[in-house]
Image 1 (cartoon, chains in turn brown, purple):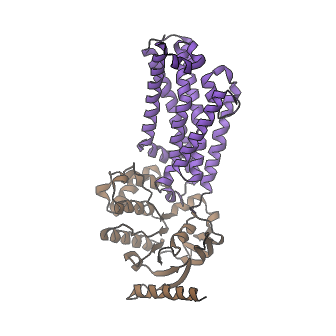
Image 2: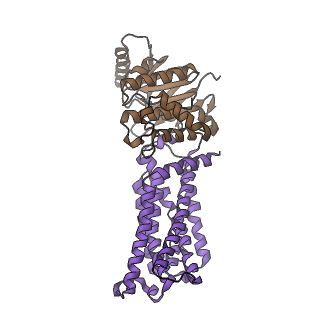
Image 3: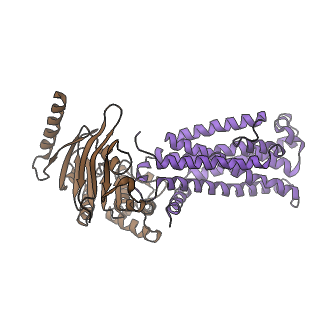
Length: 243
Length: 253
């Protein structure tokens, strides 16, 4: 098993106006759930895009299972699952068909794709919506479809950007259990959130991001996580303003 | 199954389930049948305005008149339908917000882009056969002779023109990908259509791939066959450019 499911070394990507990610080092070990917490615009989504090859870094490198992502063989991406931004859910297709197509795109054989989609429908509690077209789903159920598409092929690296968005409390619990189950099986998991939600609270580590940099970590066992989080962010903002 | 095979299978499923594909198909086929029938009825009734619009075709009769009229409509209307369809195939991923889900997959984005192109060309081939059969039935219903060998030769222009028209619309898919906008692909279709039609009417550029099929639709004798073969350059160049655009894409805007 590799030491890290994903590693970032000095990753930098800056946009016009100064936003972006300004030199981030991060590693997620097999079996680790790592939460990335930061306010809106902190750079969480940009960091995740860089991890997944959606953006190319200006400097630094990203490695998945020890291999630079530029050198990663196409088949290796079958072990990655992600939900960054919108779900892979085409409005004209029902939930089951969407998940079957997602499985196929993740390299699952046609003969196995249907059984995988059915199992995922069960796991994400989408049984009553299995034959419903995605365009008719509520935002929360659409999010569940996206999560199912990113998790059903049992990836060893899971990257989820604000996965609890639009989920009801039952959906949050279903997600949390799905994530924990995969981490116990050896997956490295990165979840982002702009608040310390239920999923962030089951993390092994919580990193705080502010203004495109990782500014510190929080102990998941801390009683008043919110207070500790805002204290870190405020201290960082004051230090930058003073500089 | 290979990556391109998976991409074709996935894109086929999406296209079959979509509303855009059947609506585009229906509008193209229905519009072609209605306009061809209407123009021929008006011409046979001696409508001066229609006869003037048909130009040299007004002198023709039988299958030549039917196919010549349909070909003129197809060269313009078919191009519009093809451009809208291929712009949608690529542009929908941006409009629906599904493009991010097409990253970090074992199926490369260039394979997905080529899969879309294969599905588009398969649709064009089906349309080519369907439109030919439809016009044959239209001719037979209008009392044209069923055993006329010239009629069969004339009818064979329809599948060729349909495929050439579809091939010429491939740049609309590239523009939709490059601009990450369905509407940009449709705008490109309109611009290309206007350029092709104006050039054809002016009679210039039988060797220009964009113009050759439209000229050939008006007057088959005026366009040498190598000029029609030259149309193949368009899908090769722009299909390749589309695959490269998808391969190099970043979610930076």
